[in-house]
Image 1 (tube, rainbow over the protein chains, first blue to last red):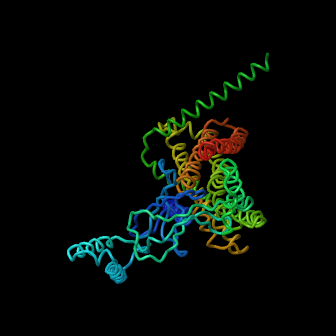
Image 2: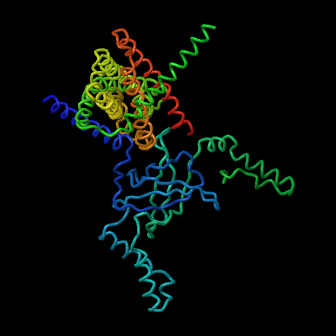
Length: 223
Length: 259
């Protein structure tokens, strides 16, 4: 009898441990259950990703659509390449919407000069190419840009996708071309303090050697 | 001259003690499990682990509450009380949960193990076991050691979880920190392998080994008198606490020092 009660108690102990570990994994570290459905990987190159960490969230209009998986440095361009996984369910069109998008794109194509100048066989080919291109598109258009944003004034850094108004959409696995890196407060402050004076004094120094007129030495924001 | 000889004798005794203890540990860790050993092991988990659950949960809750309160009153000065979740969870997972749980465990379970084994030795139960051909190391010491090694990491995880919930109770429910920022700040800063697996589980596993090892060795090697048992029990608590704190520094330096 004694061993039966103790076995029961140990069983309950193990269950409590399991629940606690599950809680730590799910709720505290948010590791297990990366609930990205139908996920795919995309990249973007930034000039500055200061403060961005792997597992930071990627949002669009405030909705979390993915997570940063990896940050690497491209040795050629010396830009930071950020790899991130996006949720396929949230960032692609359903069949109805896809049809509409395809129709819009086709219409756009038919109005283009290139299309009207081409012969019918070439036109067919162009249409087919367009349809193929539309197969694995995301809902992120080519005018959209992705930026490193801050949660609140002092919060953690995350990626924010700001949708544009384009009709062409980025395909899965491609990279988002328009990016904006971290806004460094120190950079902003130093720009504000020097007020473009750093730029103009540098120019002035150049001008002294080349003896040009001083008209160009205006700070850029005067325009 | 005499003083130097005394010092030498002390050192030799200590080193011999460590050697005997290591021999005992290896003998237990690398021995085949005996028949019925699993039942005894489960019963010892009940005594060592389940019985410590209450003190661990209550202290975890109060430490979480205090962390929430202190953290809030400090962070609100710099206007960043949204960082409360990060602070509470990292403090608990990396340091407080393993260390405090191990200290409590040494006081609650370690001293009991020493006293029990010491009394068995004093009443010559261990020698009579040897007499009838039962190995007391296997029969008495081994299930207790294994139970301690298994129980403390589990208790530590429970401690951390309850502490984080306690911090949430004070911070979010009483003081009005935003619940979303409490959890999301936590999730973005806590990494499962680095903080929970390394920081909490590996650390507490090391502490569990140290605490129970010291406890069973002190019981097994105690002077078989009532005074000897008292000395050994005290030593268990003192040595365990010192070792836990010392090893905590070493482990922290190895795990988080290079960052």
